[in-house]
Length: 211
Image (cartoon, rainbow, N blue to C red; front, side, top):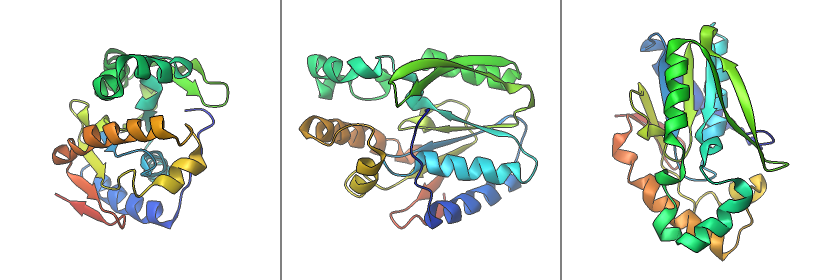
């Protein structure tokens, strides 16, 4: 997302280094890493740290933020959720998985790919074109990123929205009100159900465990 605020700290660096070492030991062509976790848990920060670390090893890794792929426009999403019922619509079905999977296939094929990119300042949806010819690895981050098929490394951050309220306020993506709390609770239920899919867990203290 354009205009996103990254809060990279020592914990992200240490976790990123541990995961980077694991990736390097298991590296394969057109490898895919997915990072899931709740809002404010540090998904994007971790993806950035890993991508930058891989670059030092001559590996070009491209972050893919699936929060760019909501089916409903940012300016319309709140009203749409309220009209359709937060408990009914908040979850993986809000995303355009067809486009996500197409962009991933284009990465694997090593061709140019165009996908959505949300500008958080203007709340417009731009179109971003990436040439995947020389991209070695894809790092997919988002609430439900580890649902993506054929991912090689699935990272799950165990922090919940209860522990990340400060980060959510600083990032300022959405106002913190009753509506937002209801959304976060539904996302919490949906995201926690994915934990069993992970082969890398990051605990409350940001320690990395491989399972």
